[in-house]
Image (cartoon, rainbow, N blue to C red; front, side):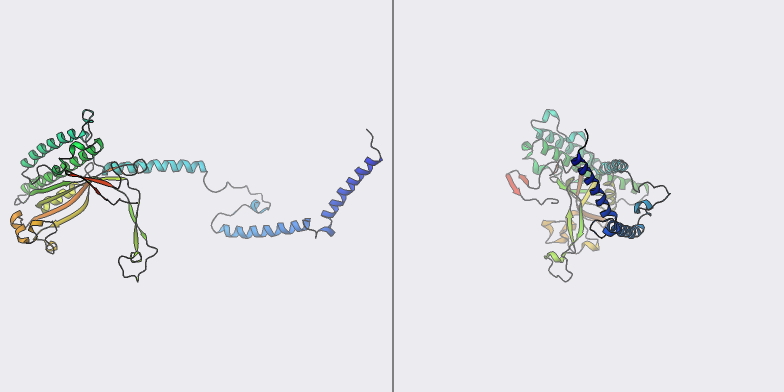
Length: 384
């Protein structure tokens, strides 16, 4: 279709409009206008100078940038970007996690008590798990009685500390029974370690023609309910003031104790021994063996012949003898090489703090059972 005069005038107007706009943009007389070519070139030069100044600072810590990064021409090849591909970092991270977990498993295996199969309630006793505990308790009493008699080790508690639970055993559920079976195993293991320490010392004395001094007397064994514990660390107290003189003030402490999530289940057993020093040292050495790793939580040593223990003769809580300390030596027949030791040793097991927030058995608030009834007791948790 041919264009008429109106269409031709419209096309010419558009052409002249484009020409005029181009001249207004590129013609030197119009460079001062906002957004003009000259202004853009000036801004580009300013930004390039700023970029080069930043590049000098960047050069102090990283390798030099390629000239192309600054908009300059260069025939040098563009190097690969520094750093590591995220995929490779993830692979390294996963590999490192596996190695760390293997180290944790080895450490836990060395520190965990190797609990035997009899510490679990068998299927035939699940309806009344206390029966299984009674059977195992009687069996351990008989076997330990034979062991310490043969080794000539004295034991003042033939029921190995569990008599106080005798009125409660029938009320225990499977969970509580397995907890106390583990306590029974640890109590048995501690007694066996005491017996073995005395026998080793006795054997060594005979082999070297030393005067016989090996002696071991188990005065008491007191198992207790298990507790949870976890990591702790000292962190600086931001409110610490060296001029503060009030010990109860928060500003008096230079460090605060920070507790982590509990992940260890401890089974404490307190034991009081009268023995010679060498046998006791052998006992301490044996508690660090893998599979029977015991944590010594508290340790008190008393002897009338040790200068450090003469300060307070009530360390061993000899309640009926505190008024007359000399009576203690007469009743216990303490010799020069003897010490009386009270310690709390605990076996360990581990649990997942996410799956078992309050441990394998109980939460922080515990019901302490007694034969005459139950009594609520507030127990401080191991950490927040």
